[in-house]
Length: 314
Image (cartoon, rainbow, N blue to C red):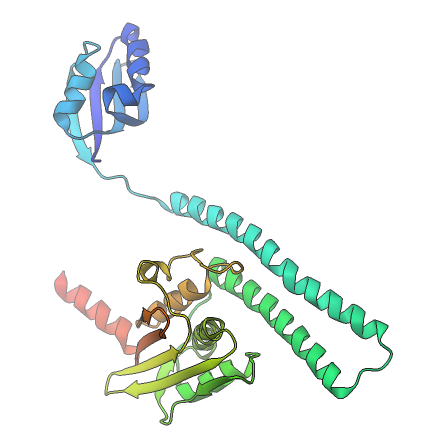
């Protein structure tokens, strides 16, 4: 519904009548956002939502008030408003994080208790317990790092890197079942990027694929390049994402999992946008999901080009 700023001349005795109709928006059809009264000039200024100007005029005619001016406006959300929204998100994140960390902490405690109780562990038992510990610790680390990346973004540092090295580093940090096969790129591609941040993107996307596969299936990663761009494609043979959910997966806090902060894919999107690239997903339920990241191979030149276009347009 459109928003308007309205100015009327009002005597003191009419103020209560205005308050009455303001407190009952369902009767008037007008939703008043804010109301200010200038006692010296006997003027009332309102910010309200209404279908059109005629509806506003009829609204104030009921209390015998003539509108001096009605101006359509747009409400601009200031940084303070953005901060309030961010604090709200952080509050929800804190609740989710406390809930999600409790489970892996319980796993760690139980394994430590078992290992302390048993005087001797054979190699196979030790290997199983240590793998469980690593998975639980890795889960906690990723959740905390995801929240920190969201609430405290750092500056992006651009250098020329081999994407294959970043991918290998990301996979080295992931604990996965031997039943999951990862098919690596056969070609080598360089791009100007932030090694650490792009490693976060690879880790999040591959972990998403691992969870979708449910410990059994294949992940295929491809690199494609041309003169200007590098394309990274990560496909899995998992459960897929329903089409009604697919447009929401990059929104902060959105998740279909019982655990998780809902920041993995939004963080990936934020990082890729800071690289002046794009990320998108396609999926089919029961078949799998493919994420495609496109990066300019030499993104250091991109800000300069944008600045030049801005100067030329002035």
